[in-house]
Image 1 (cartoon, rainbow, N blue to C red):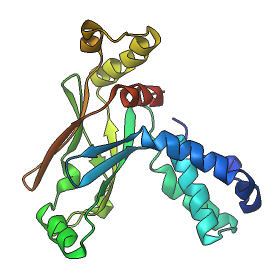
Image 2 (image 1 turned 120 degrees about the horizontal axis):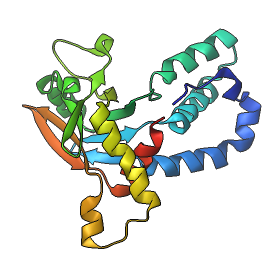
Image 3 (image 1 turned 45 degrees about the vertical axis):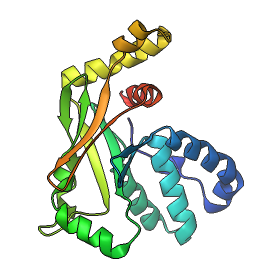
Length: 208
């Protein structure tokens, strides 16, 4: 998946004119790319649309117009765009109470190293930004890349074939579908979530 280019970024006035329509479309798309991982974590799988929305919204909110500042935002958010043979996700720790949240983040130190995707049982361990790693706590927002093994990627690609073939509602058809799980395996937080079929198909479409 190609990174966002400067030519794709609209000036603030032009963006304002199409914002409601564009934002509604991408937010609707993100709803289908969001999944809960246990009681306090939520994952959103990123693609070019979700990243483009974040860039445009940041420029709008901060009223950024200088070219060097725009280039900085593009470079920063482009880290979320999945490249070849990988998927990308943002995982949020959603605990409202500040003290409870801080207690959890301390107890779950190193959580960012334990996220993985299992595609038909083939595990692809998540990769986090080492610069955001702390020795005494984890963070409330995790930016994770999932480099896929060739076997895992091949299995995920078959989801598109299965979708195009129109696998019906029968038990046998459902049993043949690619099975994808998102997992966290930390002593303070262990959770697994099975991705719904529409999300699996969407992620298969992210592969280039």
